Amino acid sequence: MREMAAPMLLVTCSLIFWVSLYLSFCQFNNQQHYEWNCRLVTLIHGVFIVCFSAYVGFIDGPWPFTHPGSPNTELQTQVLCLSLGYFIFDMCWCIYFQTEGLVMLSHHCLSILGIVMVLALGHSAVEVNAVIFGSELTNPFLQIRWFLRESGHYHSVLGDIVDLLFVLLFSCVRIGIGGRLLYCELTSPVPLPVVKLAGVAMYAVSWLFMLSIVKFAWRKINHKYKTWREWSRCPFHLYANGHVNKAC
Image (spheres, rainbow, N blue to C red):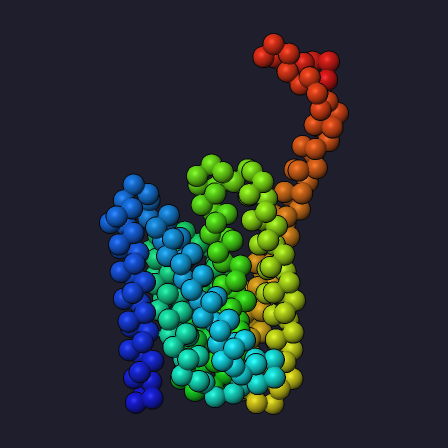
């Protein structure tokens, strides 16, 4: 229990920070609704945690593909505690306002349980940190997409770019590189079976998200193609004196 005292204090401070940030947004940005302010917090967490986890994984080390199951470093613990406080806040917010479905709530539950598990075990933070990096890398694009839609700017070139980057990053990082990380986790004799099982569950949730993203991408491509075909049939003189030209 003594070893867990410091992480528990860090998680408590993190939770207080994210809740305070959200309440501050609600106070000073009260012209917007609650979900707008919550997604601002989510966007800030995503940007910060991607930067921190990237530093931990790529600079401070060790490398998650070659050292799964290695003992937790102090910096890894701090980053995980910062993220755990946010996930607890967001999980409570989503349950209270009932804004998310079963898949997203499962993702939050697995994230919380996975972080708590590696903090209690004292090892395997290296691969959990890598999973958080991959998961949160796509999150800012998801939030920007939501803000664009809410502000009426989604159906634009910027909206198309954000969607494209989100789909590419999700498929390449969370599915492609995430699959490679899971393979390294499963074939290594060091991580405990419960950690490997958690990795499989997290990757399965990513595939559930991926199926939804594929359906969305197909619908959007289909819509763009139909719009292009309609435009190509009559690219000029669509309107005459303010009325649709029926000759087209």
